[in-house]
Image (cartoon, rainbow over all chains, first blue to last red; front, side):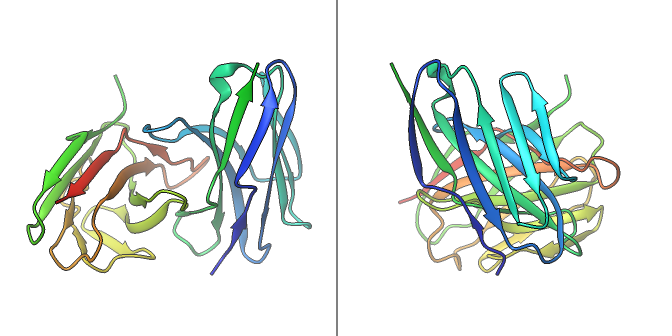
Amino acid sequence: GQNIDQPTEMTATEGAIVQINCTYQTSGFNGLFWYQQHAGEAPTFLSYNVLDGLEEKGRFSSFLSRSKGYSYLLLKELQMKDSASYLCAVSFTGGGNKLTFGTGTQLKVEL
Amino acid sequence: DGGITQSPKYLFRKEGQNVTLSCEQNLNHDAMYWYRQDPGQGLRLIYYSQIVNDFQKGDIAEGYSVSREKKESFPLTVTSAQKNPTAFYLCASSATSGRIIPFFGPGTRLTVL
């Protein structure tokens, strides 16, 4: 299978910066996605990386290195509402646009 | 208002009964997907469809069936052959060209008693 690895849990302080890492198998890579999922709700789209580098969108940024099979999601100026699960997902060529998901990183933001 | 709808939000069924989960989208997306989510596990793909009247099995298709008779609709039937059907079921849709980003519906939480 195509494993997507990310930490299970992270804790950070309100107002701080947190980086959530994701690694994947590079063979057949097509694109990398980050979703946010609050408890009991559906995932919501955050970012999409196809090329190497950093994509910035407000307080959230996502980085991709295709040669290393590595991505991270950077959250700045953390707020309590950022407490959620962050899902890393990859599409692979020949996969019909379907995504393979990691197990998600549960982020807890504390005062 | 464009989006993806799933109904119902919560569903209870007795063991041995088939149940059909609804998924409708008005985003004009060609592709639709069904995922299942269990606690502590990532989303796992059940079935997907790239075009009307065509669909493919995902990683965990056993015990499930789908149809794609209309572009807007992709219902999922959970049959009695599915060994452990209690889960959170998520439907998604996407374009098939350009920026292909799957967007998710609100989900249906199925509990089999």
